[in-house]
Length: 131
Image (cartoon, rainbow, N blue to C red; front, side):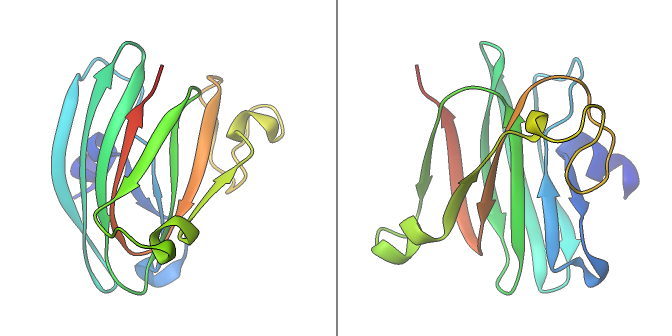
């Protein structure tokens, strides 16, 4: 389970699995796809590298929120839900690199690379690099 969570970049940020962090790892892998059990279902993640950035499609189960951390850059965020509620369900945050040097806001060790964060609610989301 831990290997799958590491390779997919999915980990719990709160007890019970209702809060998650999705952060594809910095490694030599070019892509990964799979699912990890969460409190209310499964988190699905499918990511691939594109010119130094990451394209991510993820599904967050009902009753769960997630922070998505990606390499710094511009991303277009879309949802399979095409309504105003979907637009309101994504919050773009300050880059994780704005936190204390060496630490992510949730207490994890930073890789030193600049990141951008998005907070998302339940649903299926696609983060595509935009130039």
